[in-house]
Amino acid sequence: MADLRWSPEGPNLVVRAENSDFLPSLPDGSFSLIYLDPPFNTGRVQSRQNTMMVRSTTGSRTGFAGHNYETVKGSLHSYDDAFTDYWAFLEPRLIEAWRLLRQDGTLYLHLDYREVHYAKVMLDAIFGRECFLNEIIWAYDYGARAKSRWPTKHDNILVYVKDPAKYHFDSAAVDREPYMAPGLVTAEKAALGKLPTDVWWHTIVSPTGKEKTGYPTQKPEGLIRRVVTASSQPGDWVLDFFAGSGTLGSVAAALDRRFVCIDQNPEAIGIMSARLGRFAEIIE
Ligand SMILES: C[S@@+](CC[C@H](N)C(=O)[O-])C[C@H]1O[C@@H](n2cnc3c(N)ncnc32)[C@H](O)[C@@H]1O
Image (cartoon, rainbow, N blue to C red):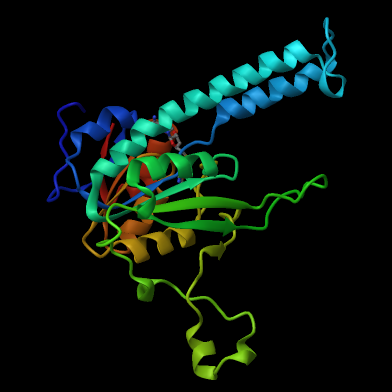
């Protein structure tokens, strides 16, 4: 594994590795597109559970809303620690993403509503604010609906380019959408459909559909197809170093792009071997 060096003339790769170990072996400026869908801040979720547990504790001081103040404070502290750890994990990997992008390349960072605002600040610092291209909202309509607040049914995808004067973006290559009111436009326009905006309505991977791999965090190919068609060209190299079930690799293969997919989880490598083995060398 340590000897492996990716080469632009070489095969597509699926690599089992801790991404921070493998990324330094890749040369600067090699990828037109990097799509990243990192695990969410699971440490925070864990700490949130801790915070809720304080409701049943007793202590010397009673604080806000009748909860034990010292325990709440202690839990909040661990919440902050988990948060700090998460960003300490992500930041060096985002710096690597910047290094690995070609001068006309684009990063898509897929997060949820709890993380995205912090990530925006971090990416502004790494790329420069002028390199921010879009925040895409992926809206879906699945699962239970909270009654105590607006049900959260979207993910956020931040898009940054390495060079705002030179990046590749091909809106003509992207699939078009039906008009909401086709009667208000000409028949010709209605038949052509409209360009997607920065809000993408798309179903999640159907639990019974043929796209489903069984990987719990698998993203729909339709979503990633837009990313790949808009921000890369046939023959380009694309990279996903939180690859999971290998959705980016699958879309890249279908659209004649070349890919490197990295994941540290043996289960992900098993699924990617089945899904992408025909198109890629598997390095375990
Ligand atoms: C949200 S999933 C990605 C899902 C993927 N987009 C798909 O469509 O299947 C995040 C992935 O990151 C991987 N991962 C987390 N930390 C990693 C690390 N340090 N190095 C490599 N892979 C990592 C996990 O194993 C997991 O498969």
